[in-house]
Image (cartoon, rainbow over all chains, first blue to last red; front, top):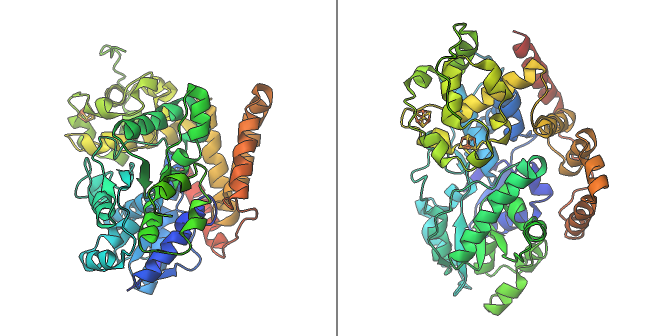
Length: 283
Length: 196
Ligand code: SF4
Ligand code: SF4
């Protein structure tokens, strides 16, 4: 299977282990990711908070590029996914703004989790599992933009999604049902409204712990960064001691597939997940 | 905060701009408050989402643009997803933020606009966002750095920055994509749109 890949800006930086694990997992599954040549930033929240035209035109350029390749476009970032889908809808409705690009809408735009959940890949994934994640208690954290608004992103279950939970179960992990699957991590508020941000991530971490999770599984670089890199800071602010590992779901796929490089991905985390994985006999 | 129904502004120009972008569904709002009930940051807002919608319909421009609501809204799309009348409340927040920034009036939470300016500046410069230089730009221009130098908050930033660097998570130099000429063209077009 060959698809166009839109990595998004953080994959070369803060989300490096996400990119590395995606590459490894796709190799295992015979998925050929062809990076969209000359892609540009989707504009993220800053564009839609500032200028309507920018918020559509920036992602639209990428859609036009992807359509030239005639392959489905896959992105690992929930925020990029949301902007690309929003632009797709705006172009379909041909709102009276001329964006200077042509896009017929002949290709699908997918978050990479949706790609892995395609029927034809489900068996393939199960066959690849050589080291089941037995005994690992996870909560799946989807965040906002992977499922909302459902009319834009075409989510089937937006209040209680299951796709990631099913995938974790297929890898042999335990996926605990919890009520904060789609709560908000605060997005870019981490830099601008610190107190509100702390409140948001604090309640997610507290609920995960209360649910009995040993780690949180994410599918978005922003959710990951907001949780993994800020636990220490939050602990200081609240006088507590958070130490809950957070994973990209693809890292756990790679681990269950027996990938030799998995250790290097985990070494990039701020909250060190290796003691947990070692205790489970997974590393 | 009680809504003052007596303060209905008869000049509908403000409301018209919003209706044009959001659609006429906004008139269907029956104040069920579902949007506010699910909003994860409602505790921080001086005017709640359902009150904002009401105020927009009443043309209370000054009041809604001065609310901190538009700057603490996290764009999580919960309100839009749950509204029984298909009102895109999150997009109303977008339009209000855009109008507030265009008005040139000081914002109640200036750091948010400054962050967006730094982020968009980074896209304009390289076509993609180089995280490290974008953060530095924001930190300098917003006075965040100055503030942290005073409070000692810089120590945490340095500590985290160092950890990220050691773990290979900080890319030191920006990647310039060849898309940058196209991207700048898009920014110029956006300026023209604003004028129009
Ligand atoms: S959920 Fe919709 S109808 Fe209900 S108060 Fe909010 S905007 Fe109005
Ligand atoms: S989009 Fe904004 S107003 Fe709506 S629920 Fe989320 S934070 Fe609240």
